Length: 636
Image (cartoon, rainbow, N blue to C red; front, side):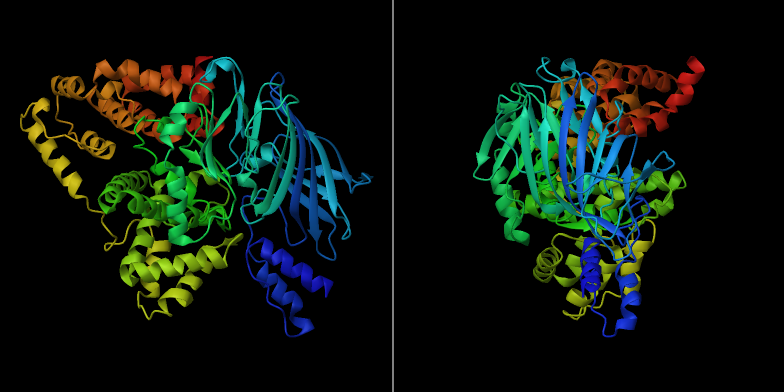
């Protein structure tokens, strides 16, 4: 009975319902089926021993740029368990003990690989319930971004934030770092007095005198959703369960920018069921944060590049909020199934934006995303990476960050939109709401999703899409010929204004009244290469593109400046690249610069100044793009 219960619990850990065997002799066969999922990016072997809870006691040192900690792992074991295997990367392990009594054991740190780090193998017995690891992080741990005061908005206090996705949690916590393994956690974190610590858990809303903060996360999460931030932060309430943290000089702007946050949560719940994480707060990070946002449960980390002053870029917040259902609640089993996190989230994001601002508005967002997707598919095909344009990826032996492309996001969205259009919105919404409810706090493989789609929607509603069509979307490169094409009447008017300008109409006479930032973004993207610098200068003088506070529009304009060698924008280009760490912006700008010899020299000079401000996630991408190590070795 005990063995059967353990197998059921372990199976739930990796997101597959364990089936009770009818005969005892079938038990081993059944259990191996339920635990068949293997994560190619983790050393963990949850079928032998699996982490169920983390208790973390830590001290943060800005002087040494490290965290000294004790991680106590509560585990569940099979009847013949002999070892617990954890993922680590550059951790200095001082000792490992077992249980509350701190009994002795042996452990071994295995060989390191660049992407996966090293396995930490700890000797246990089937009766071992707790394992204690005393350790410290490396000063250059890849998940940890240590910022000097000058790199913050206030310029007077240091700042620390983590970025654990995809497999960087192992560089600051010894853990089973797989999206298919969920655990609860508690923490006690000591930081310098005068600073506030926050985690992806229950959080304080003001500083205390001791500098010691306690946290609790009662819902099970995968390791990539572990998060910590430490800085001079203040809190502003937005609604009864929503608020924002930011540095004091940014808190008022942040509170205004996210003023519709409570309405977003309500809109999301009306679509796909109750929000199951308690509070939903935002933390505005310094500019070096490499992503637009990170969906850490209860506390989304957000880039300051969305503080446009007019709430025009808050679709990013809708995206991170949607992750509270798709990704955080129902999680991709491995990073090969990444589209299940992001495609669902983009679809959900679009539905939230449509509910709040109307179909016309959401179609502009969808059209812009479709433009990005088309360009990325063309580039990946040109680069001989066509296989990575499939939804189901094959990332074994590679860094899973290579799967973070618009394919997972926007091709995934178009697939779900295709399904909606085939079966009807009402039926598709009912399926999704049921999908999130039945699979809450579990993980999902692509193949499991196909099974649920077939049985719970297509067969149930007698809709004949066909196995071939579904597999074309998921397992074939590129886009099917009948993929949805988002249409925006407002963009059609923008295209007319571009045509008029190209034909000679002065910029001041274009019909741009009441344009949203999305229309401006489409306008800038649509400018042809044939325009000379005098006409670009006319646009710049009339509309102030080089000085715009909207980072999306500015990035598109700077891209045009590089293509057209528009020198008046070069100073702004350098300032933007040095002071912005968001990888979405960095990659296309550096990528365009290096297409010419002169541009590559400019890129290298700027990157030398900018690189210390970037997070590892960004430098890992740009280093490879610029051949940074090779170039610097040659120079030295």
